[in-house]
Structures are given as structure tokens and as C-alpha cells.
Length: 609
Image (tube, rainbow, N blue to C red; front, side, top):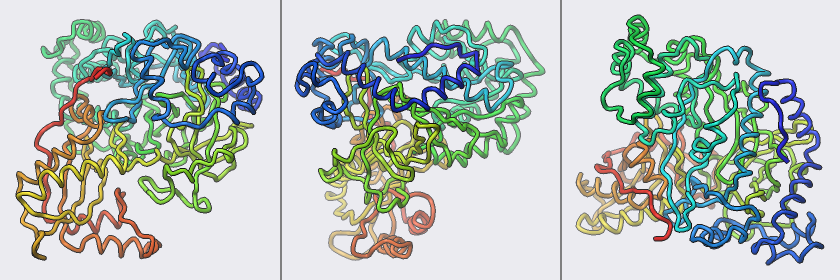
């Protein structure tokens, strides 16, 4: 199920894509047959399927239930604790991938195998011919891609649990990858694999600047990560230029492998290059800085779909007109599809699912006659029993254009009819393979980086802050709240709008700075593992802010929403707002702004605690 071809052969790659998408239905049936043939004797599947007679698509769909993470967590936890892989997979589980979604404050764990790394390597190779079809000359230079690893967890079984990209970058598939003239990076592997994210960032930017005349494309995986790199460059360009000018590396780069690899690229001093870079960076405005620093760059490659779409205006400001390219759709659970029209407008990005990556099913979402599902809306998608109508689930090739679906996957690694939680809209077909636009994560209201905060998580955190610091001694009532992901600065941060009133009067509230700052900190302490890691270790989210608004503000917000078409009878205060009229109303009535004064605790937890 993993075809082999030479990524340097664009014509062969495009033909393979045509074959995969043309034969999508037959390939999907083969994928499910292979998964069942391989894993039917696992403990999990034996509970539902009766031997040889049940190794078919219909029995699988009739007897194996659709599940979420809470349903499969006990099986995966047993493997993490040291039991055999054949609980869910006939192939040995070689590692556990940590999802950016969380459960009970800890990362979700997804099983992975050695073969799955081969499947991901194939997936990455399929991106090459697509880009070559639209952009000429990519084999004549390098990509300045800023790639990073994140902390790992050692499970009681000895298996490592780590983010999916960390898994790939640390694998032999990446480190011993065959030469591909279309994917030459400015960053040495030693800099990418540096455990210290600040040292890694500095060294990768230094290498990208030194090789600026060879850079044909720039990027990172997520838009948020790339913009952090731009901000880091803004803060450190003088030091970077000093290193280029002298041919040395600043003394605080202490990782020896990283340092040595950078010195081999610097190759002595370069006064003229340092002066050119410093002159550009010293300009008052950084508008178009990417094109000015890397004048041969043809595009910026970052994911700008889903919650990352909020960064598009900022990226466009810095890019100098360079196209923003989202090439792929993937997760910890599975790699899904690629963008066959990579130079399209960011708002039009659709992904064509590759039918050999997993077995895909789709659960229809109540989209209210195909109305747009807005990010952070909580009126269209929920987790109740009525939402899960298994008899309506359709296969990959049977989805309908214009409809919304939640994707359900069955993988080679031990996930069976698993609800990923992604909501997609079908935008069309390429041959017989559907194309999807990523709409949102189910129930997520806030996201800045890889964090995904649900409405329930936010409510619990706000409730704890209210109980701990508002009732005594301040005697204030929190009458309403909403939230906003503020990405106007780098890094972005969570903003909570609170309407407060005294318990025993209708006077404006008296706000105590220390009390409100403690509320900010309590909210952060109560948010999940990934949020706290982003704040504490990655520095990819800024301090949480509470903006207190004057009494009556949320009445005005309701009036505004009703004027935009909401029903008075069914109106619920949105727990997250986007930029626009609603945000203008809230911001115009702010009477106090407070920030968390400390970083929430976080450390890579063992999974046996």
C-alpha cells in the first residue's frame, strides 16, 4: 500500500497521484481489507468480529463501533504501561504520538509503528511533484524551513511518547534521507534536532541569513511558528549580523553539535553580507521583510487553514507579496491529504485525501442547510447522542459537495473507526477523490499555536478563578464572559472579556490589580497540558489577559448578534468572538486590563502518575 517512486521524477509523481485519485474507491477497499487481514486477531477487534467470515467491509461497519478517545484510551494506556502491542496492533508499537488535543490535562496518545514512518515518508515525497508543477526551478536552491523538536515523555513500558513531527525529525527516515535536489534545507540537522528551542531558532535563522542568496522558499509547519521566528529575528538581528560579520557564533549557543554545524556553514567573516542584512532589518517598517531578506524566495510555506487562518493578514504584511502555501493536512492520528492547487488564495485551500493513507469514513454534521460553520460557534456541532448517527456515515467517495462532515479513520496502527474531531467541508473532487476544506476542530473555541481549548475547558478555568478570587474578599459577581484569540502581537495570547458587578450594589465594580492578576494566573493554571507547555516551554503563547467591561456590555453584544440574524429566543452568549463588530463593542467598553504575572507550571510528565 506504499508505492515507491523517485521524488526527483516529477512526471512519475504526478502520474501516481492521478492513479491514486482515479482508483480511490478500489484503493480504500484494499486498505480496509489489508488492515483487517493484518489486525483481525488483535484483542480490540476480536471483541467485535467473528473470525474469517467478518473480514469484510460490511461486517466491519456493522459491528465495529465509532469511538472517541475516551473509548480507546484504556487500551492505549495498557500498551504505555507495558502490555503487548497486539491489544490493538499486530505490528509492534514502536512509539506513541502525542496529540495536540488533551485528555485530563495530559496529551492524547496515538499508537505508531515502523511501517507508519515509511507511509509518512511517502506522503512527504508526494508534495514534491505538486510544487514542481506550479513553481519552476526549485531544484536550483534551498528551502529555509524552520523545523523544531518538542519534549518527549518516557512511558512505563519504555516507549517514547512525542509529537508527530518530533518523531519524524528524530527518525532515521529523516536523518538518513536520500538526497532530493528539491528538498535541500539551509538548516543543518544538528540545529533542527537541538533540544533548546531558542538555540535552535537562532542557529537556523543564522544559517538561513548566511545562505540568503540560495533561498528559494521559506517557511515552517504552522503560521504561528513562522511568525515567532520573524519576531525572534526582529529581536536578535543585530547579534545575528555580528556573528556573520565576525564569522563566529554567539557564546550562549552551548550545544556543541549545533554550534559546530553552524560554523561549518559560516566559513569565516562576511562584512558585506552582514551590512546588507542589518540595513534591511534596521528599516522602520518590516513590511515585506521576507522578500527583502530573501529576494529569490518564491513562496512562504506554512499551514494557514483552520485556526491558523487568523495569521494570514500578518503573514501578508511581512511577505512582500509572496504566495502563502499550505501543502498538507495531517495530524498525530494520521496523514490525510495534500493541496493540489498550492498557489491558490489561502482562504480557498482544499486538501485531496490520499486513499492509501488510511480507511476514511465521514459522519455528516448538522450544518443547517449548508450554512457556513463559524469558528468557535457552538450551535451546529455537539457531542450528544443525536449527533452520532452511524447509519448515515458514508465512505470517502460517497461524500457530497457542499456538505460538512466529521472525519472518522481506521489506520494500520490500531485506530478503528476513530473520530478525529476535525470538521471538513467537501469542496469538489479530483478524479474520484474528494477535496475538503478544513473548517474547525469540534468544540474548540480558542487556539493560538498547537493549543486547542474547548468551551468546557474554558468554563472550568473561569469557574476556578471565580471561586478562588472573586467571591472573597472582592465580593464581585461574574455575570458574563467571552474570549478572543488576540494575534495582533507575537506571540498571540488569550483575552477574556468579563462583565463584573458588586454583589450588593449596582455601582461600577472596584477592581483590585492583584486580585485580577491572580484570576488571570488561575485560569492559565487550569488550562491543559499543551497550553501550559506553549506558555512555559515553547514561549509560543503570551500571558493571558482579562479585560473587564462595563455593566450592560453583554446586552449590547446580544443586540448586535440579533441585528446580524441571531434569534432572540435561541441566543446564547458566544464563548469566543472573532474580529469585527462584536469585538469592537467589547473593546469600546473596557474599564480595566489585567495580565497574568507568572508563567503556569509545566513539565514533561511521566504517564504512570
